[in-house]
Image (cartoon, rainbow, N blue to C red):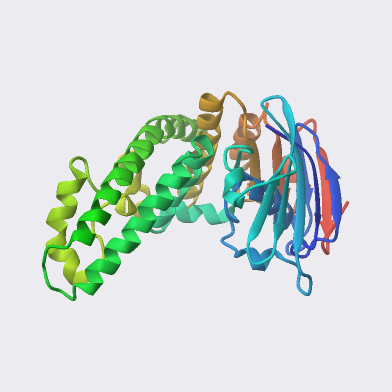
Length: 353
């Protein structure tokens, strides 16, 4: 996977730009709040996922303009392709000049892995972020997983609505049966996808973390499903309590991923450095998973990660991104001094040169 060029206009604070990238490491250098992260965000959007910064589509359009436009030329599977995005209150996508039904239809065509400082939250905050991490990674491998998630979420919303309409009265409901059948059908698929993905993710992440910590610590990542068997029965039993709370208490929307360092919970007792190293190991493991299954290296994006690591860990990361196309943002070029080849872009006041 390789990005050849990127063009854009009216995207965040960036002035109109047309850039060509090298196949190795591309460094985006500049002081804070100049637009470095905006540039890599533009690349990431072509994965079909939402902004990794959690921004709404409308927030990515330059103030006072109507639409933001982005065009990406890339190589996938040895074939040159072109994708385009038009952004206003939503995103409209094209692939090889053909209009797509939605921006999410780009999923599986252009694959990338992104790490930003906010990814620490995957380790130390609530389980919703860990589920999102798993789902985004699986979607890039299996685009059909997107529709499974959508169908499950729709049925979940409908079941919750029926529960709330029952106003605490436990009674048989044909609608409840219909939505529970849909939940079971898609919920079991989600659990199977996640379980299989985590088998390789946890192995790769453990190996990478062990090396990242100079063999001093061992990482254990454990998938924690909310049910292990007979999801239908678990849902039926949960009706007794769900009808009073108005929410569905069992299902993949309650799954979690637990991280332990030398057998101790990293979320509760891990240092910030350990939590950061876990987040990095997860992203590098995600890239390894993509390569193992797709047979092609994904584009790797690091947003201001190097400045937060000691020289040893910086060196480890630089060694693990060889053979991949990489985009690194940094305020200090000395952070990537170990790189022999690459291309440097400077961003100042939204101007890229």
